[in-house]
Image 1 (tube, protein in one colour):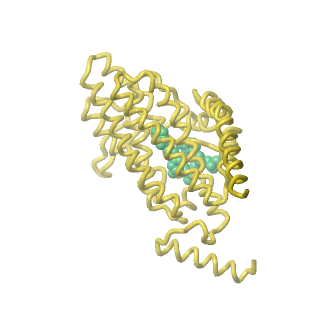
Image 2 (cartoon, protein in one colour):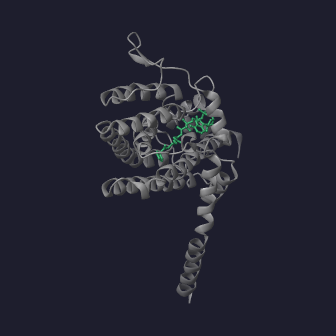
Length: 315
Ligand code: FAQ
């Protein structure tokens, strides 16, 4: 391509961003913008799919039929989110198969939060309340992200995440109205999930490699630290309302800032989990690889059926 054409294309792209016009799959876009989106959307899709495992672990052990039906619906929603996101990623010219292979080989990341075990029923409350709560805080602004297919996928995802957050909080509310043992179980789940939930927002702004460029491209609308602070501000009153204690001795309301100050995050733990050494990393990837192998016959049968139909149509 001539240099002059490239300059014009870049100018048209910049103009769209400036005027809040979405970038669509057939539009010209800088290669680095495309690569950033493929990285973020595929990581997001993998997170939804791997994220089914910690809760899937409790479907057969839900305490009653209503809880089981709700949890089952929630986990199925996460599968749907993964599908929309893989489809959005494919519009950027990257194949779903390659992306899944990258997850299985350890080349692609997924959210750190899903490498923690779900030990008790209260963890279903903590995951819905905090993990989906953090996901909403991060994803509502993504409904305004600059890439059209990603932004549109986020609209439905956020509506569903909203229901997920409420069902989790409702589990916590119910436990906190229960016996001393149930209250202790809810508090223990909060103790284990609080700090990993704060880590979901990614490294601090000072350490984040991609934030500034992603904000310039209007992929991200807020920094990691801004979203983390918004999450803390929203979650603390919810905990207090039902008698839960946030496991952070440094947490206090800062009158001057009009926000909560909170303690230091253990970034060494985050690094370990992201680099594959979390409590459940090996188990999670092994489960996904096994699912691919177990589903192979279905994909082969579907391909054979499509081939047969094509031959029949041609004859
Ligand atoms: N875990 O420079 P930044 C859900 C990586 S969905 C693992 O700040 P960026 C629903 C990052 O990739 C949850 N890795 O990066 C659900 C980068 O590595 P790279 C997922 C992390 O992209 C609920 C490096 O660190 N949500 O929960 C994490 O600008 C319940 C430097 O970081 C999304 O994916 C992490 N937590 O900002 C499902 C939302 N944080 O690629 C089931 C979309 C950072 O250079 C049950 N994604 N890294 O090797 C985003 O908004 C962004 O990608 C961030 C990271 C904010 C996650």
